[in-house]
Image 1 (cartoon, rainbow, N blue to C red):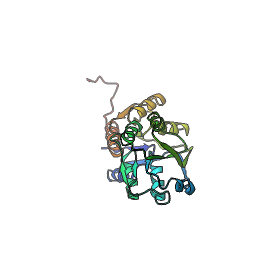
Image 2 (tube, one colour):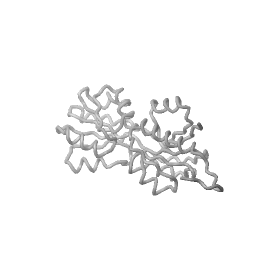
Image 3 (tube, rainbow, N blue to C red):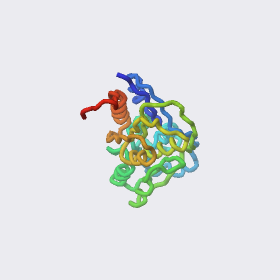
Image 4 (tube, rainbow, N blue to C red):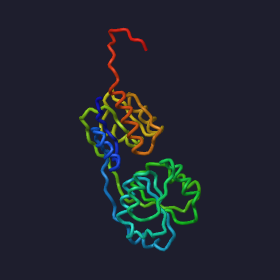
Length: 247
């Protein structure tokens, strides 16, 4: 059985990377962005040190930032940290604070969790310079006392990928936009695997390829589903169109 070579439009966790390597899958992962972290504004964080706080991150970059500067920004042992994904939860476990995430890794369920547990604590949303989800609008609509702190900046990395892959995996519509904006297009005969309906809709709009939507939104589950579907397609028997086939 032939094993696929795949492109992954984002950074994956070490757990997922180890699984791919154990399965001898050739893969290239690249988010097509460059990240620069900001140093914390210590005067600002000192001004809210004694307030009851809940921290929110919706990206792995923000999670890494909080782990690095946890003590400097005054994240107390009793503070709660909310996140979106299992990958972010794994990163945040290193800062020794209680971490909570919704069952579905989407902004709306996260907002519902924050709203449900609202106790008038100040919600501190650690974000990048570009809004990637609807969380701010959802918090505003429910009168949550929150503020946003920009902890990193992302800029587009225009990298042309010359390698041809057997499948292309994308976690979000933003991943697809960055991939195409860099001048890249998937190989015509390769399927595009999309994590969730919104990503699938973006893929259908941008690419003429076969798009396969995954209901498995957790990172490793999505990767396993994608590899299985791509491998199945790669090993389909080639039809000789000069002959008549029964289907």
